[in-house]
Image (tube, rainbow, N blue to C red; front, side):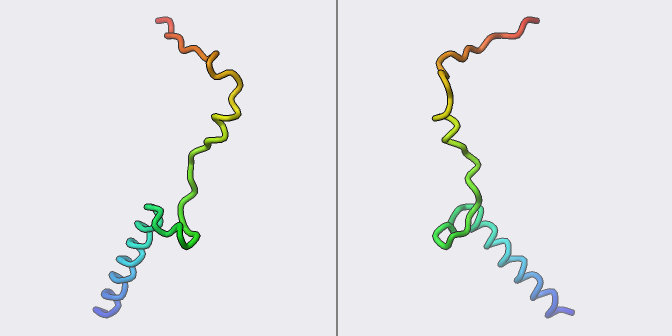
Length: 59
């Protein structure tokens, strides 16, 4: 049973390392990487953003 646990531990270490590389964006050169959650096109699509005013709520 000991070789089984060694293999399982090594597989988990390798998977953890691969996940860390993926989440850092280090694998983007190979076409793998997380999707960028930002949406810069939304800023360009805004109509008159200077008209937005922040008001304090009434208590």
